[in-house]
Length: 278
Image 1 (cartoon, rainbow, N blue to C red):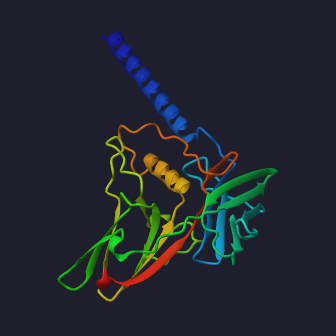
Image 2 (image 1 turned 180 degrees about the vertical axis):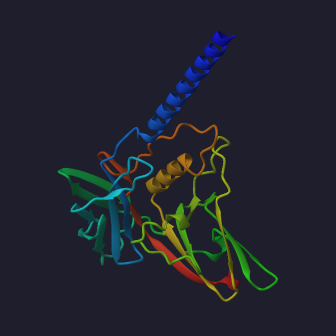
């Protein structure tokens, strides 16, 4: 009887050890990126402000770590007319002042030199179609107390042109190209259709309630065709991934070399509305 009990304990211990070892290996495998990038690029050129911002970081390799700013890089953007020289305004943030007129439908070329390597990226400036009040990517409902309740879906499909939107109101700051932490407030209108059943649409939205005399500011941001496709691919791996989705892959941006991210060139229209007029 004792021998049977000892055998049972041995087998149980072996199974538990194997299970723990497998869990540790799976965890280590999960935490180890399949590809390590030298540099990550965010930001680009906008037509709303003269000030332009690009952020350069070394991507984090562990969930508990944060990206490290890249210092002392050479950052230049050619808009087809002249070179814009970016200077480091804070660690990893590079700024330039652009007083040239927009070069619509033309290529803007980014060149980065860092650590004896050169990285390049190209994006095209597509002119934004001015905001049309009948096609705002939000829905509102007037309440009995005259307040306005609104819903902003993160994704809307079936638009003729792809756009990124930033909607600001009380508690949500105005759009600022130097603030790279505002991505949580973006919403998107896609020219591509909604994902198929393997990529279920999560109910991603933002709710708000405003007094009737409160103001709301809407920014409509143009996307080049390639930038729109890049974002769509990113969302296939994030917002729309489901139980039967494919294994996440590395979505390729437009920066050459062993780089991550997308250098974008965007045209912007903005409008300010009273909540009661929405």
